[in-house]
Image 1 (cartoon, helix red, strand yellow):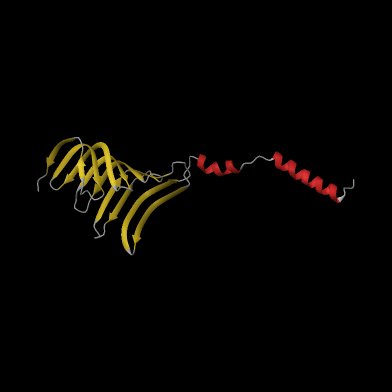
Image 2: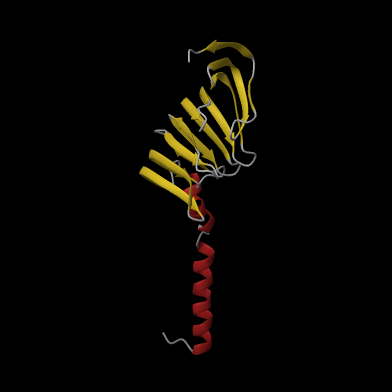
Length: 183
């Protein structure tokens, strides 16, 4: 069978069209593979990260495991085995946060700390609770769980807590009593 050039071009074009029509557009499916996965996009172990700015240490994060779920529509980073996070102020004073579990929601900048949460300031003000949220944008922490808040030689008890980042504004909500400590 002999095909002339004009018929050859028509034949090749027809073949290409048939192939294109019969192929399914999977591009969107391929893009969504990561979004549909229940697996993290990144896993890290034995994290020991120090953040500096202009040569000054600003924070130090230690955690045995981190899972990054930025492949989700509502992305988050999870620390399933807890965190030990130290924040340094402009004067080098350190405040420390410890929790058995932590989750950071990327879209809202909200941090959810759970299990044996302890926040200690450089002045030894200390908050104990089972869950604490921290709004990174507003630099505000809050909970509606039972709390113990140590300030000086007393511990205030209650349910709920609101405070700014450095505890200069700190309120135990639904106050239920005070325990006084011996000096």
